[in-house]
Length: 137
Image (cartoon, rainbow, N blue to C red):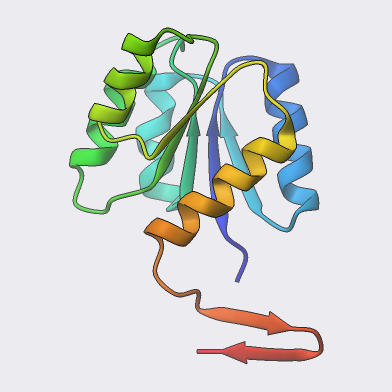
């Protein structure tokens, strides 16, 4: 089963670059461009991880982060933002984000952070592939 990532980002070029690379890496990806769309997509898509911008139309990323961290089903979140001040990073992490990366970023670093957060926060996968061997738990 592919891991699901929800991208909440209003910049089409960033969304396209991240989505295309994550799909290439084997993830199932959905994208929303407005903060007020994010929470309904969290419920309907049931992502394993959220990549969350802070400056969004409709509802800001801090409010989304707070709502997700207080929901019954906890979804790991990485904030991806141009806001690079320490106070923004602290606020995001205190509201429940699992990591924070500032724009501009290298995709390789973002991918490494995604894997690290998933290792720390997600339960064992339902399926695992080892070369030609497929285990379905």
